[in-house]
Each structure stands twice: as C-alpha cells, then as structure tokens.
Length: 558
Image (cartoon, rainbow, N blue to C red; front, side, top):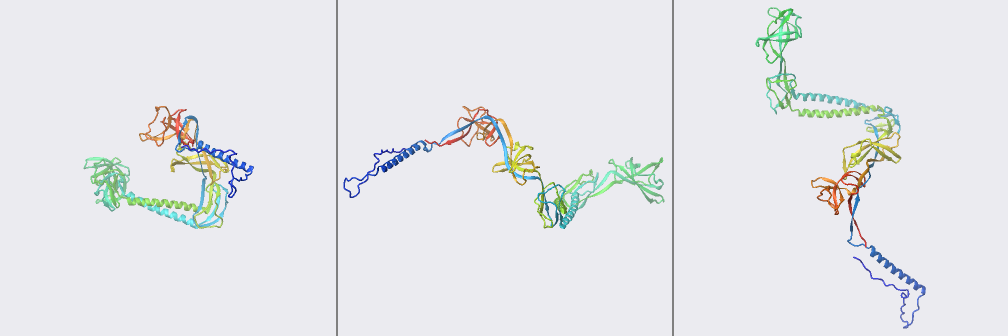
C-alpha cells in the first residue's frame, strides 16, 4: 500500500521571526527589545534545512519503498552451444616411500655395535649393527620343535582320516562281507575279505632231477580236469625246498600263475606240465587252484555313511566300499593345520630376529628413525631403525564415481609441495568403493620418481590431473540437467526445452518435485563429462536450443 505524507508548509525568512512574549508585570503594549539580526538569520537556515531533509526522505520512500507481497518470479533459461569442458581430479595425500623396511628387535638382548647413523644412505646387505640375544636362539629351537611335533600329529591324523574311507586295494571279488546299513555304529572291525580271482595260483612239486630246468617266466600247460581243458600258465617263482616223498624222492616247488577268464574257481584240481629237452615233465601230484591273493578289509570306529558290501561282488581297484563319519578327525586336522601355520610363522620371525646377531640392510635406502646405540640393553619389541628407499614414492588418493571410469594406469598427475612442482603417474585404480555422506569414491595410487629428492617423504602433497577433456562439444549448465522418474519405474536424464508445442522426442514425466514453467517440455539427453559448472551433452538436443534452468524470485520496490 502506498504511503502518503501531509505536505510541510514552507516559511519565508520574514515569517520566521519569533516574537518574544511580554514579561509578567510589564506594561501593556510595551515592546520587547528584538534579538540581533545575526541570530535571526541562523534560525531561518535551520528551519529550511529541516524541511528539505523531510521532503527528500519522503521522495525516496515513495520511489524505493518495499511493496509487501509483490515478489515477482523470473524464468532463467540457457542456450545449448558448443564449447570445451575439462573434468579434473584434485586433492592431497601423504608421500610414502614405495619400499620401506622396519627392523624390530623382538627379544631381549644387548646391542654390541651400531655401524650406521641417522640419514645415512645404505645399500642392501650393508652391515647395520650386531646384537647378542640368547633368547632369540632359544625361540628358534622352540619353534622348530613345535613344528616337528605338529607335523607328526598331522601325519597321524591324515592316516586316520584315510582309514575312514575303505576302498578296494586291487581288483577282485568280495567274500565274507558284513551286512552294514547307513547309520550303523562300528568299532574297528573286519567287514569283508577281498580275493583276487583275476588270476589263480597253483603250487606244484617236481623231482630234483629237473633242478635248473624250471625257472621264473617259463610257460607251462595247466590241465583242469573239471573243465576238461588245458590253459597256459606261467612259472612265477621256484623254491628250492626239499620235500621227501614216502618213496624217498626229493622234490622242489614251483608257483604257477594261471589267468582266469571267469571259469576257474578255488580248490579246482589242476596239474602243470612243461617240455624240457623234448621231454614232458610232470608234477609229483596234482594240486588245487587258489586265489592269487587274499586280503582282510577293516574299518575304524565311527558311524557308517555309505556301504556297498555284497558277497561275490566284483570290484575294481580303488572302488569305494565303506565310508564312516570322520568329522572329529577332520576337525582335528583343521586345528592342526592352523597350529602348524602359526608355528611356521613363529619360526620365520624367530629366525629373522636371530639373524640380527649380524644385521644387514634388507634394501637399499636411507636410515630413518635410528633408536639404538652400542651397549644398549633391549628388553624386547624395540624398533631399531627403518630403511626407506625414497627414490620412488607413492601417494594414496581417491576419485568420485563420475570420473573413476576415465582414470587409467599410466596417466600423468601433477604434484605440488611446498618446495616445488613434480609429476607422477597412476599405478593402480581400485574397483572397491566406499560411500561417505552420499558421495561414492574409489581409491587409486600415484607413483612418482624421487631420485632427485624433490618430494619430502612423510609430508603431504597436493595433486591434480585431467580426468577427461572435450574441446568441441555441446555444453549446458549443470542446473539445466535433471534426473526424473518415468512411468515404467526407470529414470532418465532430461532437459526442459522451450517449444510452441510438445516436441516429437518428448518423454512423459508422471510427476516432478519442482515447478516447470509453461512452454518447456522434457527431452531425454545423453550426458558426458562435467566440471563444477557445466556438463557435456552428447545427444538429445541441438545447438541453439533454449532450455529451462531455474526460477528466481525478485523483491520489487516501487
């Protein structure tokens, strides 16, 4: 509402003269003596100045005074145009030596000599100090004894678990099997007899008159009356025993092996003849066929998990016959494996510490943090020194999810420290991200050559690099690009273009969380790289297209 003020009447200098009241007791009509002329002029000037100030303030208020509730909205637009855009990554990180080794004395002892000083350059293998520690030597002996003990237990446990699975040691046939079912409890017992009937064995006795005429590997003819057949056999062994018959003849024995095609059986009568110098040599008597070999099969205590024991079942070598529960043994092996690994690590540490009796530089570099001296008594867990190779350094950094895809191993990085500028390269980019306050970042590592020592180790350095760049692309302010939800539940990146009617490539946006002015329509766009202010538009709009950016409110004065 416009405010008005009553006009202020201006007076002339003649009208501004002030009459002095008549003092009490003065005669009526007696005039008061007038003030001086100089004082009247001064009073007149003050009145005129006051009137002018009031008039000027009223005019300013009329012109600039705030009108309550008259805020106007202004639609801000921008135009798609060609330009260049560069996306950079910058930050700071701690400079660390790429290679660094800290020597820690873990056991009590005495430092006898120190051969280096703080800041000294050393080469790998250079003497550093000598250290006398009987405790370190004892730790080595104890660790070796522990490993030996765990190894014995480990081997024994493996034998136990191997016995939990019963397999056929060779091909053959099962006999005298014990009937087992899954869930049965067994306590270390024989469960079957395995016989090798793929070959049969026949023992024959011959007269000493043929001594030396029969030998291992010799082919013989084996006659089996029950089958009315003769099969070929082989002499496996000759035993020069001396069996004396009732007639006084002396005999030696020969073991004959006969292949079994499945028709030969135990206790079948058979005899083996051989031709010697054109003469057929017969055994003293017939013999009986036997299995080539026989084994008793047993399992340890446990609960039956599976079984395939059946009398007369033909099995192949390695075939699973019975398995019992070995959970306890498996747990024992796991515990022993952990203990053995721990003992091996202790041995490594003990041997490393014992080697400090004559310590040498593990790598080439600079001596940093030297904390020991000759004659020092060390109680244990003392960091003696660190050897750092500062000729090559690393800096750990992070990049946000917008730019991580642009970072490649080998990219150049600008480094800035208080003492000057240098350069590095990206050596690795991790694929594992972390989120903090809604920002997703990926770690990457920078490596730099520091042969000249321009980078101070264990100090912070600023870094920056160009993640991506486009010199001739369509660009828009970031504020002009929005991500909206579509009717099918997906999202799209859009800009609102100015048009007289709906464009052909307009997308339907079911709702928005901001006011979009009339005459602007959502069009899907593909965006590329962006910096802090602008974003690259790869497709969706053309150069010269006017797009909506934001609405601004103004306060109007009148």
